[in-house]
Image (cartoon, rainbow, N blue to C red):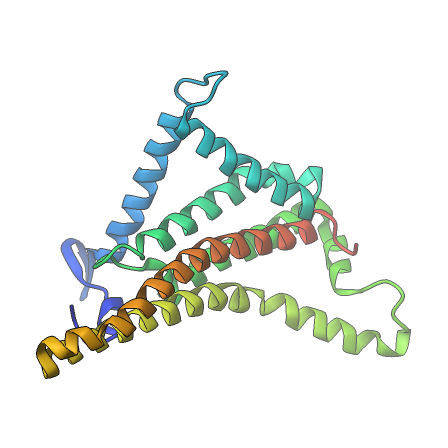
Length: 251
């Protein structure tokens, strides 16, 4: 195990795919874990829904729990009309959750610890909201930036703040997930490094002393498991909140 806590986040090329000019396009460890998440989720959902038993199997129960959890989240934040976007929100939630959980496996790669990935997901949500809002409501979509009941003399300031808040959504949406996953995995690596350093410097006594950081690692791993789920949930519920603005602008 490397002592450098940043080394675990390095992207490595596994094999080249194509070359455009001087730019080489390669299949990376990050792409491998994203592909594994897609394949794993697809197989899980296909296996879970294959039987459609009246008395559900464990796999079917897990899939139904995930379905109801996301469906309840969509309905409570975006209303019944928000269920139009259920496949979109469900896909994002399950994909982020799978990537977060994969990152907890020893020596695995944490895809969501890279801002480029979380930013791509956040921008997908942002442009979905913008395009759908404009297609459905036209220019009335911009009522989103004009809250009701605001005095006229405060309106320019409020509109400017609302526009800035809207444009900054992809930043906050992506940084929240990225920062939480990055910080948690760095903490795990640091405490794991303490055990190695103590064992290498003090021998058997050091390994005994390493029991304290080991206990901290176990506690951190449990916390990171909870954080992995919570961050997938937060990413999904923020997506629902933003989609609600596209469905009901000005409310």
